[in-house]
Length: 512
Image (cartoon, rainbow, N blue to C red; front, top):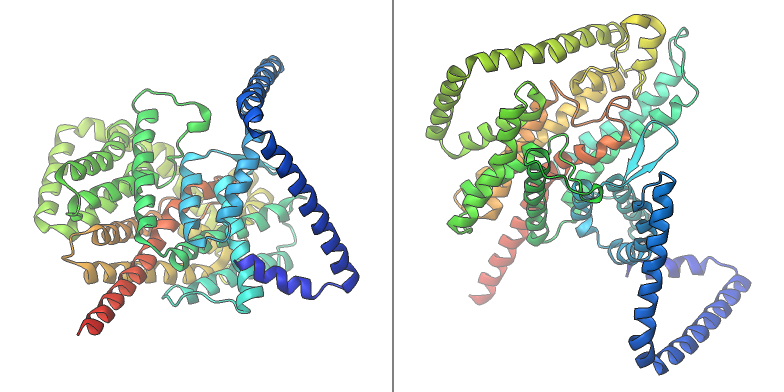
C-alpha cells in the first residue's frame, strides 16, 4: 500500500519519545478492540436476533420525529439522512483513495448523479465532483512527492501546453494585482474569487490527466460510457418526459452533457459491431432522444443543441460521406417545412443573446485591447467594467476565446489553442489507427474525436470549457468536467490499445 510506505518514512522522522508514546497508544487501542470483539462475538446470536431489529426500530422512530420537527421549522429533511451515510462514505473513500484508476469514474458519477454542493460563504459553492477531484489530485501529488520523489506525467502532446497554461494562469493573476489600473476599484473578497477561478481553470486539465494517466482497464471506459447513456435517459425523462424525480436523484444535464450523450450513443451504434443489433438500436435511440428533444423544443437556444449537431456531423462525416449528403438533404427539407418556426426562434435567439453578446464583446475589447500580454487576471475584467463603464456594465462575454484572452492575455490563449489543437490531432490519429476494428475502442475513439472538435468550436459562442467566475461560478466544474474527461479518454484509450498490442506481440513471439 502507498500509505504504509509513507507512514514508515514519516515515523523515521519522529523523536524516540513520540514513537514510544505512539506504540503505547496503539497497544491500548489493540487491547481494547480485542476485548470488545471477544464480548461481541460471545453475544452474537442475541445481538443478531434482538439487538439489531430493536436498534433499527429506535432509529426509525427517532428519524421520523426529527423529520417532523425539521419540516415544522422549514428545514430540508434530506440533511438528516446525510450524516447516516458519512461513515459509509468514509469507508468507501478510504478504499478508493489510492486507486487512481477509478478517479475518472468517481468524478463522472458524482457530476451526473450526486447533486451535493458545499457552501463557501460566497455566491459560489463547491460541488462534490470538484471535491473528489481535489482529493485524488492532492493524493496523487502527495504520492509523487513522498514515494516517487518526482513530479511526472505520462508522455503526451498536451503536457507542455498544460505546464504553460498553468504557469500563465497564476502569473497573470499576480501580474494583474501588481499592475492594476489605478482607478479600478477592487472588492474586499475579490482575491478569494480570483484564486478560486484560477484553481478551477487549472483543475479541469488536471482532471483530464487523472483520466489519461491512471485508467488501466477497458472496463473503466465501458462504465463511463454506460453512466453517460443512463444519465441521458434519466435526463430526458425528467426534462421532457414530465417525470419529476426526488431532489437527491436529480440528473445534472447542463453544459455539454447533451452533446456527449448524443455522440457516445450514435458512435456506439455506428461503429461497435461487438454489440448485437438490439443494443445498437438502443444506443441510437438514447443518443437521439435528448439531443433532438432539445432541438425541437428549445430551438431558440443554440448553445443547447448546436454542439450536439456539430459533433454528430463530424461523426457521420467520418463514417460515411453518403450519410452526410442524406443528412444535409434532410436538414434542408426540415428547414423548408418549418421555415416560419425556424425564423421566429432564431430571431428570438438573436434578440436575447446574439445582440447582447456582440455588445459584451465590444465592451470587453475596450479593456482587453489594453491588456493583451497577460490579461487582467482571472475574472478581473469585471472590476474594470464596474469602475470605468458603470451603466454599460455586462457580466461576461459567453465566449471562451475572449474570456481567456481577457483574463490570461495572448500567452494564455496561445497555450489553450495549442492544447486544443494537440488533442484534436491526437484523437484524429487514434481514429485512423483503429479504423476497421468495428469494436468498442473504435467507437469510443470516434466519439472522443467528434466531441473534442465540437467542444473547441463551441468555445466561440459559449463558456463551457472554462467557467467564468461571475456567471457559472466554481460550481460550473460539475458539468464542464464532462468535456475534459472525455477529451482525455482518447489518451488513455491509445495507451491501453498499444499495451494490449505489445502484449499480444510478445505472446506470439514466445509461442514461436
